[in-house]
Picture (cartoon, rainbow, N blue to C red):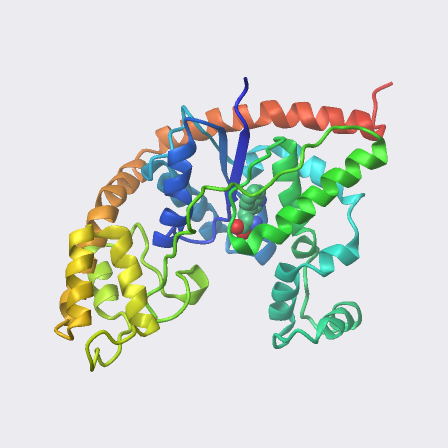
Length: 353
Ligand code: TRP
């Protein structure tokens, strides 16, 4: 039996952090033997926020190195850059003919990004204001069309490979739901059973929690609370030592504040059960010193990131290797993409005489 097709992409907008590692990369590594895995760098998606060209290119390179350094094996999984598959751009045009402006405007991610571009504060009540501003706006604040059609492009990434399992974060589930809707719509409009419907990949177990160092919420690029895989030991130690804490437990067995619970979450990911137990007990009997906890945490994180960082730097120094990996990945990705695109053109009536 052929393996199920898994596909996931990441926008090249900076370095990968510990949250990306535990939430995505390490899981990708785990499944690469058992599925037909396709991991790509979504550089066309990154263009929707108009990045600096030099930075965009540098970011594609580091993400590739980071994928490989984390253990994704290019002989098992297909690793490619989105823009190396021109079939995606063509099918994006074709699929857009079946996508409504309204449904795109209603997606949460679009509304958030449109608000940001227009400088409107986020409330649930200002959908109409967004619409008015977009259509009536005569200033130079602009919501670009790529931002609106972001879900079409993402749907094409998935459908052109006929992927059925798509590991994504919670914030991308709505896009995945739209992808299913577009697939069904295409199938029923043309009376074909062509696109399979993709679902989130269920890794089982509780979702891993990777909090940031600022005391609340998860680790995220835009929160500025990240530990990057590429962080030098000095930088990493400093970040951990500066993590937000509280005044310490005042009475035995007191409940933990969020900043402290977050440090324990990170410790649980990177330390041994004995170490976690030691600090939990110290917290419970009020003998804990947060400085000691942080020192231990920094060293345990470094034990995870140091070999990865070394490999990232090796790979970044070997352009030939990176080029080879991407050429091989593009070839594999294009094989299936060109087949799907040819069928889509045929189905839609774009035919040769
Ligand atoms: N939109 C995704 C994100 O921001 C990235 C992405 C683009 C993606 N195309 C995809 C993820 C296809 C999964 C499948 O995280």
